Amino acid sequence: MPRETKRGLYQGIIEQDEKGNYFCGPYLLDYQLVELHFRLGDKVSLKKVIGNTSRKSFDDYPQKSIKFSLAGEDHDED
Image (cartoon, rainbow, N blue to C red; front, top):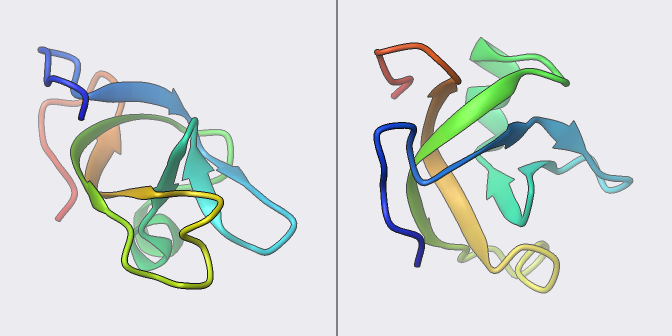
């Protein structure tokens, strides 16, 4: 598992695959959080990563971020 730095565990751009999953690099992003607070192309900083428990997306994304914020912001989205 990645180690957290001042900038979070991982930084990247929100993308969407052909199945409709939101992801950032190798990490699946929580769908509802992206829908509520973010847009495709936003640069985000991942703060918490867990194992992906979804059978549908596990093969593509074994890890999922459940806590992330816009890169450069001091607060986190819950």
